Image 1 (cartoon, helix red, strand yellow):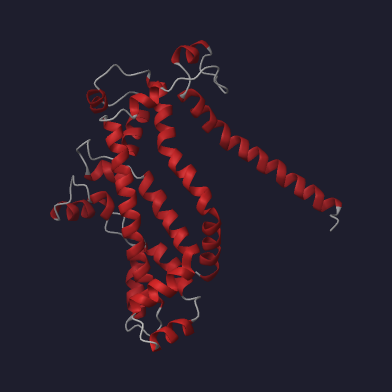
Image 2 (image 1 turned 180 degrees about the vertical axis):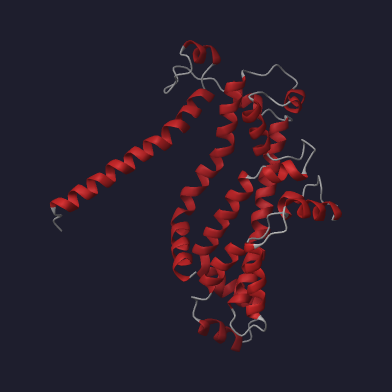
Length: 291
């Protein structure tokens, strides 16, 4: 199909704008990677203007990820919190969405009103802190998993997707004697991979990037996620005393530690996203149309 002059100009402009946006996004992250693998004396000689490292050194990564170091433990905490949190959040979101997608559910509108109400009005920071304290969850390994284990917005997206699945499939399975759990597990979920990937990625990003809840509910530095340590390093432009004590050796320059910590925290998301991008885009499209 031959494009008109106006269409060619439009396509060319789109490519130019997207290319510029890509460069604006990629260059800062590339700079962070370059500094994190460049010896400090070369960094100083070039006044910090490094786009292509002339020599490589992984001393910053070795210092941060040294076995037994505080950030090594924090990285493990983050992986545990993210894995456990995403599984729990998906379980709660899926079961609630499946139940509310059933139009014959008694009190369906009432329950939906309760969920929507929580999106508009929240308890607040202080009441939430008091509740968590009374439950004995402060400074535990479970508080950062439980405090974000449900999202009414994500549930509504998943519910909208479930409602697009033909009701005849569930009715025929029910007539054959299948339980609701079996219908959900063997029929609904296999057809819902796009929305599960979408909601799972949303929860994954939230859990992985969370540091604010750790500031509120965790005081033991051996239980904090790696994001809180990264935030402390960047905000104070120095290493926290707890990290220095845990490392037990003279730390490298702070600028390299900051850049290496950023790469360590961001890299897993950059690796995971391309594998579920197709499902993520499809799920977001369906949720936006049906929601």
